[in-house]
Length: 317
Image (cartoon, rainbow, N blue to C red; front, side):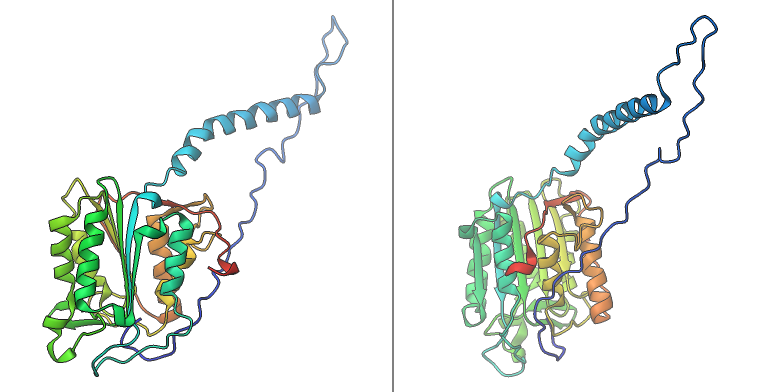
């Protein structure tokens, strides 16, 4: 989403990439010739039996040895049950100067459904849509959501709409933003950071934005680099100094990644890595929109982000 023109596309089904099987390393094993004892002409165990027994023991050893690794890979550090989410989607504005977007096929509501399907309690999700997303309402909802997160919980904040940048300062545009006085009517990224540092007591922070200049959210993430208490990450549709597409490509990418099915889970372990999400968004924005973008993460942000088996994204989410 951004200042660029163009209709908002319908959510597209993620491409599922299959993996080609690796040949068994024992496929070309040639059993040795059985030896016979001069004292006892009885043949030793048949070669095929010996090979089968060896393979069984070897496979068992691999499975046993692999159990701790598999268990570690399936321990996601994001707990949806302790997550509180604020989603703001603004596609039309009160004052002239900000172009509107079509409301048909909006994907921000699909993201809301996806989070709930992933396990975020519906009562933990606040969605401010269009006329309800005034600056006062956004500030109040942000303050309330930030304070609701428990000490071990996660805060997720998402915005879709227009992003504005004036004198190296970035603002998200609530419904009543007036471009004649953006500093007074926009929701500044710096203000969001101030609210978080004043009131956020949780453990994990995830910031998402589908708008121009959304990469500025990385400034908030970097402000937590030396904070041992908070692990933070941002995933956005554009860099801080760049505009963004007028389509839903970024939000579609996040929905597809959280919906599982192999869209972003490149190693097929049913765990969505933070790096996999960042890489997937990067590829989608680069090849579908010709936009270069990378997210930001604190050094402490966990590698394994979410347990992500297939949510049947094709079936109505």
